[in-house]
Image (tube, rainbow over all chains, first blue to last red; front, side, top):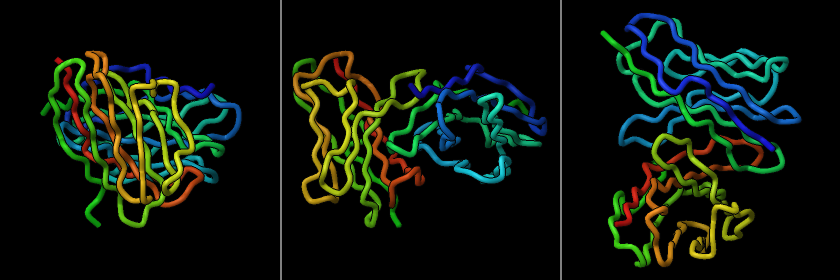
Length: 113
Length: 114
Protein backbone atom coordinates (compact mmCIF):
# COMPACT_ATOMS: atom_id res chain seq x y z
CA UNK A 1 0.00 0.00 0.00
CA UNK A 2 1.08 3.54 -0.64
CA UNK A 3 2.34 5.54 2.31
CA UNK A 4 4.22 8.73 3.07
CA UNK A 5 6.48 9.38 6.02
CA UNK A 6 7.55 12.79 7.21
CA UNK A 7 9.99 12.05 10.03
CA UNK A 8 10.17 15.58 11.41
CA UNK A 9 7.06 16.73 13.24
CA UNK A 10 8.41 20.17 14.08
CA UNK A 11 11.39 22.13 12.74
CA UNK A 12 12.65 25.50 13.91
CA UNK A 13 15.02 27.62 11.84
CA UNK A 14 16.28 31.17 11.91
CA UNK A 15 15.23 33.55 9.19
CA UNK A 16 17.75 33.43 6.37
CA UNK A 17 18.89 29.90 7.17
CA UNK A 18 18.56 27.05 4.72
CA UNK A 19 15.80 24.49 5.06
CA UNK A 20 15.30 20.84 4.21
CA UNK A 21 12.10 18.95 4.99
CA UNK A 22 12.23 15.20 4.62
CA UNK A 23 9.72 12.98 2.89
CA UNK A 24 9.89 9.24 2.23
CA UNK A 25 7.27 7.36 0.28
CA UNK A 26 6.31 3.78 -0.32
CA UNK A 27 4.97 2.86 -3.74
CA UNK A 28 5.85 0.14 -6.23
CA UNK A 29 5.97 2.16 -9.42
CA UNK A 30 6.99 5.73 -10.16
CA UNK A 31 4.68 7.88 -8.10
CA UNK A 32 3.34 11.34 -8.55
CA UNK A 33 4.79 13.39 -5.67
CA UNK A 34 3.58 16.66 -4.26
CA UNK A 35 4.44 19.18 -1.59
CA UNK A 36 1.63 21.30 -0.17
CA UNK A 37 1.77 24.11 2.38
CA UNK A 38 -1.01 24.94 4.83
CA UNK A 39 -1.10 28.22 6.72
CA UNK A 40 -3.53 28.80 9.61
CA UNK A 41 -7.00 29.45 8.27
CA UNK A 42 -5.86 28.82 4.71
CA UNK A 43 -6.44 25.96 2.34
CA UNK A 44 -3.66 23.69 1.16
CA UNK A 45 -1.55 25.31 -1.54
CA UNK A 46 0.58 23.35 -3.96
CA UNK A 47 4.28 24.23 -3.81
CA UNK A 48 5.55 21.81 -6.45
CA UNK A 49 5.00 18.42 -8.02
CA UNK A 50 6.99 15.64 -9.65
CA UNK A 51 5.57 13.41 -12.36
CA UNK A 52 8.55 12.35 -14.44
CA UNK A 53 11.68 13.70 -16.07
CA UNK A 54 14.12 15.97 -14.29
CA UNK A 55 14.42 14.80 -10.71
CA UNK A 56 15.00 18.33 -9.40
CA UNK A 57 11.80 20.30 -9.56
CA UNK A 58 11.31 23.97 -8.91
CA UNK A 59 8.24 25.33 -7.21
CA UNK A 60 6.74 28.55 -6.03
CA UNK A 61 8.11 30.79 -3.29
CA UNK A 62 11.69 29.70 -3.97
CA UNK A 63 11.18 26.05 -3.00
CA UNK A 64 12.66 23.07 -4.79
CA UNK A 65 12.55 19.32 -4.25
CA UNK A 66 14.61 16.40 -5.44
CA UNK A 67 13.22 12.97 -6.29
CA UNK A 68 15.61 10.17 -5.38
CA UNK A 69 14.26 6.81 -6.46
CA UNK A 70 17.03 4.84 -4.74
CA UNK A 71 16.13 6.40 -1.40
CA UNK A 72 12.36 6.65 -2.01
CA UNK A 73 12.65 10.27 -0.98
CA UNK A 74 11.32 13.62 -2.14
CA UNK A 75 12.86 16.20 0.18
CA UNK A 76 11.86 19.85 0.04
CA UNK A 77 14.51 22.55 0.21
CA UNK A 78 14.82 26.30 0.35
CA UNK A 79 18.16 28.13 0.48
CA UNK A 80 17.00 31.04 2.61
CA UNK A 81 13.87 30.91 4.75
CA UNK A 82 11.61 33.93 5.26
CA UNK A 83 9.43 34.52 8.31
CA UNK A 84 6.37 34.15 6.08
CA UNK A 85 7.35 30.52 5.37
CA UNK A 86 6.19 29.50 8.85
CA UNK A 87 3.40 26.99 8.19
CA UNK A 88 2.60 23.28 8.03
CA UNK A 89 4.12 21.38 5.11
CA UNK A 90 2.68 18.18 3.71
CA UNK A 91 4.21 15.70 1.34
CA UNK A 92 1.77 13.60 -0.69
CA UNK A 93 1.88 10.74 -3.15
CA UNK A 94 -0.60 9.92 -5.88
CA UNK A 95 -0.73 6.96 -8.22
CA UNK A 96 -1.62 6.82 -11.87
CA UNK A 97 -4.42 4.35 -11.33
CA UNK A 98 -6.21 6.40 -8.73
CA UNK A 99 -6.58 10.08 -8.13
CA UNK A 100 -6.56 10.11 -4.37
CA UNK A 101 -3.62 11.67 -2.60
CA UNK A 102 -1.94 9.98 0.35
CA UNK A 103 -0.54 12.59 2.70
CA UNK A 104 2.14 12.44 5.33
CA UNK A 105 1.47 13.69 8.84
CA UNK A 106 3.10 17.02 8.10
CA UNK A 107 6.03 19.06 9.37
CA UNK A 108 5.38 22.28 11.26
CA UNK A 109 7.95 24.94 10.42
CA UNK A 110 8.67 27.71 12.87
CA UNK A 111 10.89 30.62 11.82
CA UNK A 112 12.69 32.82 14.32
CA UNK A 113 13.78 36.36 13.40
CA UNK B 1 -11.32 32.09 -10.93
CA UNK B 2 -12.75 32.24 -7.44
CA UNK B 3 -11.19 28.99 -6.30
CA UNK B 4 -12.84 26.18 -4.37
CA UNK B 5 -15.36 27.36 -1.80
CA UNK B 6 -16.82 25.49 1.14
CA UNK B 7 -19.76 26.27 3.37
CA UNK B 8 -20.13 26.58 6.22
CA UNK B 9 -16.60 27.31 7.42
CA UNK B 10 -17.45 26.19 10.94
CA UNK B 11 -20.16 23.93 12.28
CA UNK B 12 -20.85 23.06 15.89
CA UNK B 13 -23.41 20.36 16.51
CA UNK B 14 -24.58 18.02 19.22
CA UNK B 15 -23.91 14.32 19.07
CA UNK B 16 -26.62 12.51 17.18
CA UNK B 17 -27.52 15.41 14.89
CA UNK B 18 -27.16 15.36 11.12
CA UNK B 19 -24.94 17.86 9.32
CA UNK B 20 -24.42 18.73 5.68
CA UNK B 21 -21.49 20.51 4.08
CA UNK B 22 -21.29 22.02 0.64
CA UNK B 23 -18.37 22.33 -1.76
CA UNK B 24 -18.30 24.44 -4.91
CA UNK B 25 -15.35 23.45 -7.10
CA UNK B 26 -13.59 25.56 -9.70
CA UNK B 27 -16.17 25.82 -12.45
CA UNK B 28 -14.53 23.84 -15.26
CA UNK B 29 -13.12 21.10 -13.00
CA UNK B 30 -14.78 17.76 -13.43
CA UNK B 31 -13.01 15.95 -10.58
CA UNK B 32 -14.05 16.66 -6.98
CA UNK B 33 -12.53 15.14 -3.85
CA UNK B 34 -13.36 15.05 -0.14
CA UNK B 35 -10.72 14.63 2.54
CA UNK B 36 -10.82 14.69 6.34
CA UNK B 37 -8.09 16.17 8.49
CA UNK B 38 -7.82 15.69 12.24
CA UNK B 39 -5.52 17.61 14.53
CA UNK B 40 -1.87 16.81 13.97
CA UNK B 41 -2.55 14.64 10.94
CA UNK B 42 -2.43 15.02 7.21
CA UNK B 43 -5.61 14.96 5.15
CA UNK B 44 -7.14 11.51 4.61
CA UNK B 45 -8.98 10.66 1.44
CA UNK B 46 -12.72 10.05 1.78
CA UNK B 47 -14.21 9.94 -1.72
CA UNK B 48 -14.09 11.46 -5.17
CA UNK B 49 -16.32 12.20 -8.15
CA UNK B 50 -15.82 12.36 -11.88
CA UNK B 51 -18.63 14.69 -12.90
CA UNK B 52 -21.67 13.26 -11.08
CA UNK B 53 -20.30 9.73 -10.71
CA UNK B 54 -18.81 8.71 -7.38
CA UNK B 55 -15.81 6.62 -8.39
CA UNK B 56 -14.15 5.64 -5.13
CA UNK B 57 -14.98 5.62 -1.45
CA UNK B 58 -12.56 5.10 1.41
CA UNK B 59 -13.24 2.62 4.17
CA UNK B 60 -13.20 5.70 6.41
CA UNK B 61 -16.55 6.62 4.90
CA UNK B 62 -18.93 4.70 7.13
CA UNK B 63 -22.62 4.16 6.43
CA UNK B 64 -23.36 7.41 8.26
CA UNK B 65 -21.53 9.38 5.58
CA UNK B 66 -22.96 10.11 2.17
CA UNK B 67 -21.71 12.35 -0.60
CA UNK B 68 -23.43 13.53 -3.73
CA UNK B 69 -22.66 15.62 -6.75
CA UNK B 70 -26.05 15.68 -8.46
CA UNK B 71 -25.33 17.78 -11.52
CA UNK B 72 -21.60 17.42 -11.71
CA UNK B 73 -21.06 20.85 -10.21
CA UNK B 74 -21.28 21.39 -6.45
CA UNK B 75 -21.09 18.52 -3.98
CA UNK B 76 -22.56 17.85 -0.56
CA UNK B 77 -21.23 15.68 2.24
CA UNK B 78 -23.76 14.58 4.83
CA UNK B 79 -22.98 12.99 8.16
CA UNK B 80 -25.90 11.35 9.94
CA UNK B 81 -26.05 10.72 13.68
CA UNK B 82 -22.80 12.55 14.31
CA UNK B 83 -20.33 11.22 16.86
CA UNK B 84 -17.57 13.02 18.71
CA UNK B 85 -15.04 11.16 16.61
CA UNK B 86 -16.39 12.96 13.54
CA UNK B 87 -14.92 16.23 14.77
CA UNK B 88 -12.39 17.24 12.14
CA UNK B 89 -11.69 19.59 9.26
CA UNK B 90 -13.44 18.45 6.09
CA UNK B 91 -11.58 19.51 2.97
CA UNK B 92 -12.81 19.63 -0.59
CA UNK B 93 -10.57 19.75 -3.64
CA UNK B 94 -11.09 19.82 -7.38
CA UNK B 95 -8.98 19.13 -10.44
CA UNK B 96 -9.37 19.52 -14.16
CA UNK B 97 -8.23 16.15 -15.42
CA UNK B 98 -7.22 12.78 -14.12
CA UNK B 99 -3.77 11.29 -13.83
CA UNK B 100 -2.21 13.26 -11.02
CA UNK B 101 -3.27 16.73 -12.02
CA UNK B 102 -3.03 19.37 -9.32
CA UNK B 103 -5.85 19.32 -6.83
CA UNK B 104 -6.96 22.76 -5.69
CA UNK B 105 -8.18 22.78 -2.10
CA UNK B 106 -10.88 24.80 -0.44
CA UNK B 107 -10.50 26.37 3.03
CA UNK B 108 -12.35 23.51 4.69
CA UNK B 109 -15.28 23.13 7.04
CA UNK B 110 -14.36 22.63 10.68
CA UNK B 111 -16.85 20.35 12.43
CA UNK B 112 -17.08 20.19 16.21
CA UNK B 113 -19.37 17.56 17.70
CA UNK B 114 -20.24 18.19 21.35
